[in-house]
Length: 273
Image (cartoon, rainbow, N blue to C red; front, side, top):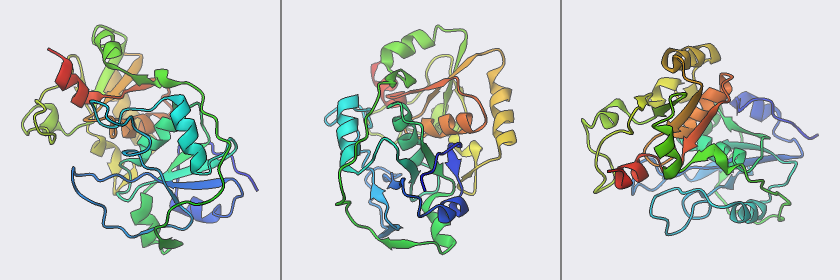
């Protein structure tokens, strides 16, 4: 039985119930939350495949971290993970909800919509006693995935120079309030503190409760309290990861008019004078 996903998030119970769907692909998108920290998790959801943002799905030697790759590269690497045109992808990470929304958003920027984030991620899956196994490298068949260029879903530096002049859009920064206001230094050595002109702060943690997204009504109320007369959201963060949590929450609550600043503060703080 093939499944078609109608929601950008699914519960652990849903995944357990649909675990044997013929087109199901489970991706582990985990990257270390703290720079230099290695993951100590030795297990994964059974049959999961590791989606390596840092070493495979980001531009190597790019001046800024996590830079989105081009369509050809993404297509090739997704095929090597056995992903097909008709796959139904569930992506999770080992911190609950942290990196998985970035993977979800990257696929959206490739024109692929049949993907959802596992609400609560691996911690909740494991806590419920659902199927786990020792981590292993995917060695299966190559897929026939084909990416389509929707990279306009990502903003670049030049685009952000226009966005700060755009009165119809609102830039929301997902970093903590202490980082947004410069009360604590940026974790990346040599990167100055600050914020993008005209931006407002919406720490991604305000959209989560116990490593799960808050309810649709709660999220909708949060966005409505910030949007005022603006028509579009542009999400930013430190390096383009947690901004995608805001994008996921917006999509989940019914707001589809948004984009993500790929380079985020790491790029802006380095280039803007």
